[in-house]
Length: 361
Image (cartoon, rainbow, N blue to C red; front, top):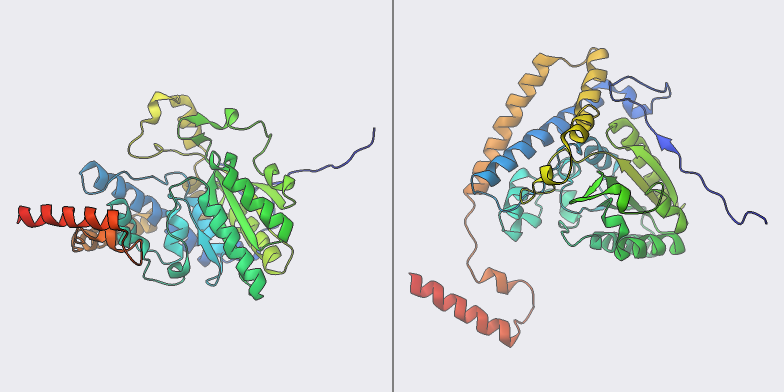
């Protein structure tokens, strides 16, 4: 018997859980300590934003909210590697990447508060990115379609999608990577493997030894990365983006991290996972390791951390106030922006809802 094909999945890491370098060949961006401080500050901002969002939900000012606790390195690493002209197709918790690309916290609050105007990002480059995608894995097809358009038009742009470990079992994910491999599309898909698909653990989601190797089947470059190490995430993303931009096709990155919070505010993860597992994950979380590395380099300390947290608190308070002061849309808005001409059955419902509102006044 002969071998028809062989493959390997490389693993990339620069910082261990204690913030110590495990290799000396730092990428160029990581040698700029001022830049690394800015990335850490955005990770810290994202964590403050996340805590504020949960507090808003608990006090009835937001609907269901999907926390990003523990994903800060993965998300900021993705966003910071992209160019403004690239296009991002997120799922529903990648706030670190989106804040980097100009999405405002008040827009996130509006979306989770039930106001679809939150999807209408006002700042570039986020303005040309896709809206949040709660239907699992559909954003991968949106990104693949964008990548096909970039190739047809001869544009040096890349489409990036993020998806969870559970979502990588969906047909839409496989359809997107198959198209990317068959057509050599400039598509990068980052599987943010946080070990849990709501209450289903990674070990029973797939028989694959790694999730990255799913990309091999589609003919894409694939790699597994320490998703709690922002240097590794950023480097892997930069390499994947450069390959795509130079016509070498798409990539699948598996970013291994852990969901430290509940799946959403409608979930209680204590019902299906043990305290020991969560405690072990906290020991490897992304903020601590980057902070230790920056402190060891002499460019960060506790005083700077407290000062930045205070600035973040002020920023988020202003964003919350802007959200709460946003005028509510008329009830007819739910009918008015889906069809160019409202179908007869919806028009009837619209008239009925309007009549109820008029009676109330």
